[in-house]
Image 1 (tube, rainbow, N blue to C red):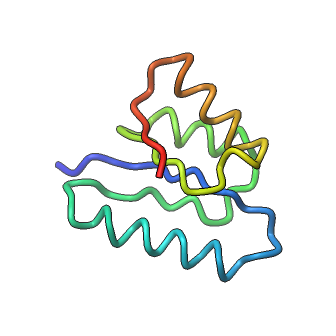
Image 2 (cartoon, helix red, strand yellow):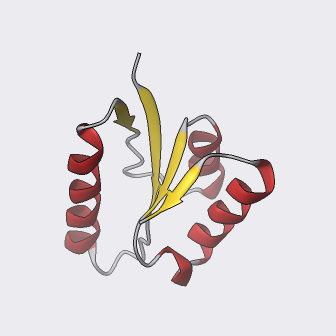
Length: 88
């Protein structure tokens, strides 16, 4: 069974096309592995995204994550609770 990956990426709404391209590029790279990328489209509530994140097998942080509050919160949770993650 494929493992799941949660992608944490900056999403301020102003660069929808850039966000989509970044996500597509990361997804293509991960498809070569035995991981399934979780669909977080339309998830704007932090509670929803955190629920998906803590149930994922791995969390990937897209470039620029350090500049966005939601992403830094997600990163802090990964560190504090020992969730597997890596930064791109």
